[in-house]
Length: 127
Ligand SMILES: [Zn+2]
Image 1 (cartoon, rainbow, N blue to C red):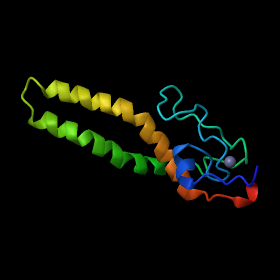
Image 2: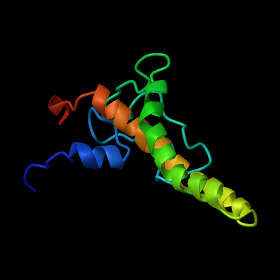
Image 3: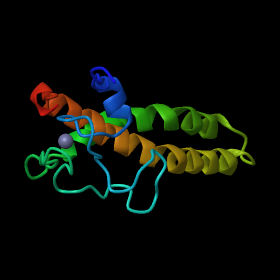
């Protein structure tokens, strides 16, 4: 019914979709909180055949997107640990590790998705 409008680049990015067709999946396993095979990606988009790793080492750039967020999340715990009583230091270090484990898969996946979305434009001709 009617013309199906493509999803926005924002939704495509957070939905971990292929930036070119916004339909194919970037990662083999779905979801933002995946631990097993969290970085496993098909070589090409199943829908439009776009190659995901455009050049060797392409994903290294994605680390620079995730990295500041990791630092921002870890910093409060680091300072809490730094100024905590001796008894509480390990609690804050523990929380630091927990925060890292919870947010890391999310951040690396979004980092890669954001990185490929700025590198590959949406192709309207693929409708
Ligand atoms: Zn695609």
